[in-house]
Length: 400
Image (cartoon, rainbow, N blue to C red; front, side):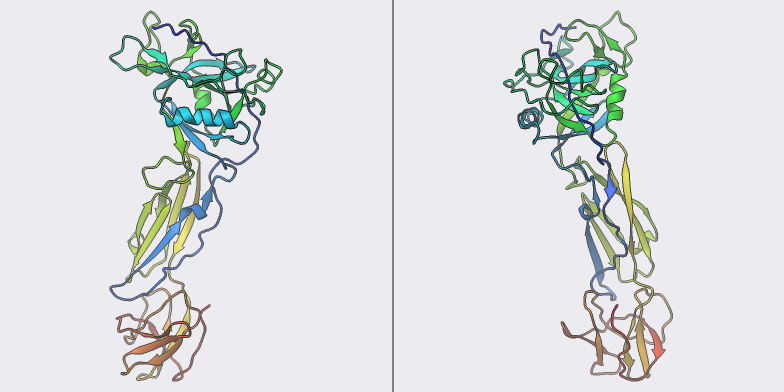
């Protein structure tokens, strides 16, 4: 194995955060009714922005996703506390400098528990060497402010205070005392692992370590059994990428802090369900007659979920619209179809109006509906409302 003459003393700092970084449902869906016209050959479409219903409440800053061969985890950055460190780290992320980098140092002790990366990367298969340096930008100024609590990420450095470049480490133990300001100036915490991502860090720090000489004298490896040979590339703890992500996905292919999926659906034939990123579209054909319950699940990269059920169905009870001139019957409209009828009464219904009045068209089989905001509307649609006896011309009820 190639000897790498670059050793960065690593320390991490972080505070204990008693905040919620798991997915939650912020609002109930309740009952959402198709908006528009119910009639033969017409469709009704509801568009729902799922960002209004789900959140990770205490995550407010840029999030970066670490994608390793032992699992993914997310880190929230703290630009207000360590602006130069955050800008420096994101510079490496945006340059894809952390692709194929490894965890080159692991210390599982409770007194100083860390995993350190960002300094070395695996070489291509054609190379004679396994590991090479990550090209670094100029060193940055030390920004010690936050304590080195478990779960935080900090910039690694040498004994020189302002020497941090590409290397970072995650505190797998509470290093508040050992890596505090009294220890040579401290180490700059610039973010925290969120959700249950520390389960991945704990898996990494639990791997057996091997000594290949400084700076790889505390190198964690997987399935390294023949110590007479160099390890293969697959045995290293490797990051495929470390990159920025958004809180919500814009497309189904986006990596995001929250991902959405459709869970259980009752009466799935009642609606065409389309999920694109954070936006749900429900299309109801005119023939949809049954209550439909749609479970929406928000999930983070470690499998933590929050869910809600959207009820998309016509109401079971509604109001009387008007009177059939010919038969002397009133038309009683209910928001679910599929019950008995005695005649065809064409009509139109717009859900966003507040009050309907009624009249009749030029013939007895055409019903006119009138609304103060919309004027006269009528149609010859072939719908079948239930018919009840009522006095001619009586307006019975308002929409509630």
